[in-house]
Length: 365
Image 1 (spheres, rainbow, N blue to C red):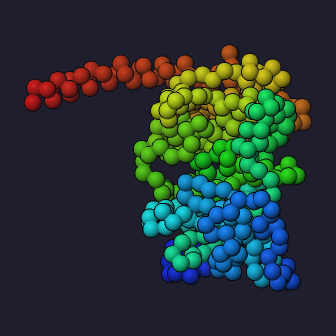
Image 2 (tube, rainbow, N blue to C red):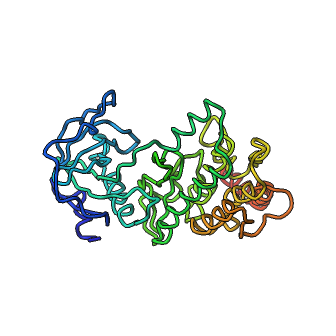
Image 3 (cartoon, rainbow, N blue to C red):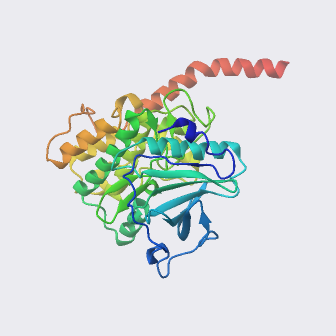
């Protein structure tokens, strides 16, 4: 991949790059877009029917905080893609433009079947776009909503297999020193054939000291964010492992590990509360799989799996009926909440006299 070309994203109007290492397009191109571009009854968006840099935009696939995604057809190759456009409100924000370009650069660098591939990217009339592999299916969040309505959780081994695929996608990112930082069901695409793919690298962080967020800023989704991420601290691959562990917990129990009325309440629980054991909510969950899930959810990053590859290896063993390789947690199954609370109490005891003296001096002044 050519970094000079990638740098053109966000540059002159109409700039264009090709990213990703996808297979060569077919030599024959269709003369007109296929009917699948806008299936009957499919939702439309403001850009449906528009022509952008050789792509015709069709049905609206979804919208997020930073971009809108359309089904699109590429003239010249005849392929259907998912076409993500930076939203109009964000188009003039340099930080959001940089984050969008960072997503294209990071996702294009990852070559794994468990990651949604970025194929092409550029700019049209001041708005950035990227073309991605089109996954025919639905998000894991949509699948979970259907199962929650039917009160029908995934079979434990099926949940482990899905988590293993996500872990393999993360392993490919972690091998390149990339951290996703927003693993959640809505960012995991489930294809019709059962293949799961990690999507949306909009909050990706490179483990080279470069980040597009300020230290102390909460990023990610509070329901699934690692404890250190909720406190605004820098995260590494183990933060992604925690988030995937929270997703696995929900696949097994149809509920996330924690629930609160506010983001602050969720952050506190991720740091200092113990979730119900998965087996108490779903007795079908075997002890070995519960142990893997709880190891992902450890409050202390040092006690989690080191990265996606280590987690994928143990999930593969679970699927084969073997015991996990990772060390046991010892004693009563837990995520280390009591120890985290003891550390918090010790910090308060050590620093409260100092804080009290500072307050007294301020009052006297």
